[in-house]
Amino acid sequence: MVSIMYTIGEFAAIGRVSVRMLRHYDAIGILPPEHVDERTGYRYYADRQLGALLRIVELRDLGCGLDEIGAVLAASDQQTALRDALVRRRVELEAGLAADTERLDRIDERLRAMEGAGTMSISVDYRPMDAVTVYAVEGRAPGMGPENVTPVVDQILPGLIRAIEASGGALNEPGVFWYEAVPDSEELAVHVSFTADADPREADGYEVVELPPIGTAAVLTHYGDMPSIGRSWMALMEQIVADGYRISGPTREIYVEAGSEDQSTWVTDLVAPVEKV
Image 1 (cartoon, rainbow, N blue to C red):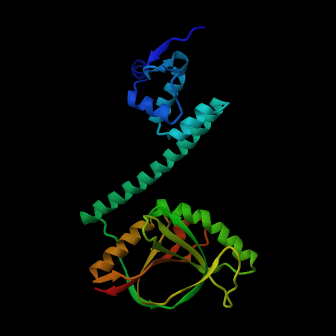
Image 2 (cartoon, rainbow, N blue to C red; image 1 turned 90 degrees about the horizontal axis):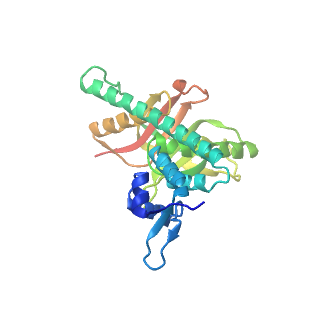
Image 3 (cartoon, rainbow, N blue to C red; image 1 turned 30 degrees about the horizontal axis):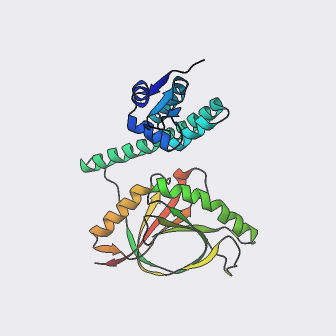
């Protein structure tokens, strides 16, 4: 059966994409033309390629990345690959909806506070803190915020727990997390730790780190889950500025009560080293 051939302009019009996008799909290898005229360089597409073009358009409209689309088109079992891609995209969209819902709640709370209908009660304690020795591991997040930090914590925390238990150590509470900007980078160093034993033991899988004492620490206690902790951090920072201080070192999260699977019961001290401006 002879294929019908289309110029790049005709093929683009059928798929309702631009000629520039077809050239891009060719350049990255997910939809090369059926034939390229050696003399003129003109691209021609066959009618049998319409299915691939329409699939690309559909998946792009659903927000799938070109790498994933290319994998679907290259799969020996395209139906299974397509189903897997759609399931992954659905999970991503659900996570995005949850994040957007949480942002809407924060906006509503902020608007109520501005209108005087619901102000957040802030109690910041300024006090010194002793040095503490911990068993720690480090990961890198693309930026601050629970959406960036939480996946890193979820990735490195189980390994830390296994390493401490394998060394014969105990998972001593409270856990201490601290964060530092990575020089010459937009990344954030995420440090996850448990309080060390009275006689700290070296072992593979973690470092023994002594967190220095803090002369003056601004401390705000956060009650509740991790997705909402950003609001408490923002409140702490605003209060620090209002009280005439500035941040003078890495901030910490001290997990005072975090043993339950129900994060609504968690108690976390948010700690920022400060000094008077």
